[in-house]
Length: 385
Ligand SMILES: Cc1ncc(COP(=O)(O)O)c(C=O)c1O
Image (cartoon, rainbow, N blue to C red):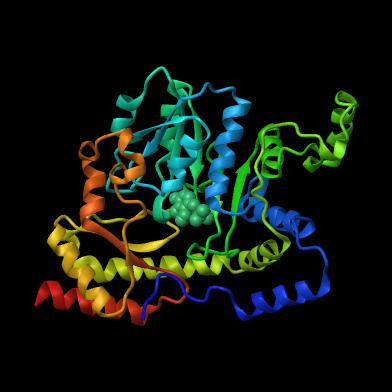
């Protein structure tokens, strides 16, 4: 059985969690969350990180705070790719902005860069990049385009921990970025997400919005200013902005700090598997859109065929061999009932190819040369005999 993800918590991670549970009475957000944020800052190489309860919450909070800090009018337009995860886009709608879809390219699965220009209107304010399935988008092109049109860039790195554009880790190439630590991702906190930025003012809004908008969540050095400003309100219940409660817990942060110690090793295994997979798909390379990039931090092993019947054939055979498959993330999001009003799916031809002819199988630290050999055997049987 080759599942999308397996028992990602190591025995020692579980032991450390049990030791923590036995040694504390404080389970809600506190010092362990701060520790994980600081560990993540060090690994990611960023200034500020805010731990929340999912990657979806991270996207929502990031967009809400950016809209507030930069005073963006309601229905300002946000360029989003036609293939990404659903909540990357629904977050845009939920904070009162408008998603404008751009087709993807079939090389790095980010925007079709030539189509960005056409999607721009006077209302466009943000480019919301997704680094899909571990592939770094071309941030040089995107940053130049954003600069030329005075747009804010945000990155969703929920599937791309450690992917690099040049020498720089994705997530450090824009105003702010998000990560997911859901079970199937490069590391897990079971459920969890992170928002990163170098902008202190924006980070303060993340901290406030994460926890009801409460002023007391800010660094202690910042408290007096607000005590002076609002002497008639009890500081314990002083709400500076419209917030949510998307906090995570000490338990998940303890898991996060332990998992982070494994992350470089997990990425190396995923990328070694990716190299072996490139070898076994070489004989059918002419049937596929090849997905590769020197900065990859492989999330999964994708197949995007030129023909739907080839895709169906391989998918069927893999499933018969107990290899789990999934569509490529949300595939063509314009086909989803909740997003239909934002465009006609037929106008996104590359997203359609991903939708009709694409699927992926799992890549993680349990995938090894033996499994990739099985993959090669299946491919060989179907396409060469
Ligand atoms: C690109 C992308 N963005 C956002 C998310 C949301 O993350 P979560 O599942 O932690 O809510 C995911 C989840 O898989 C994702 O793949």
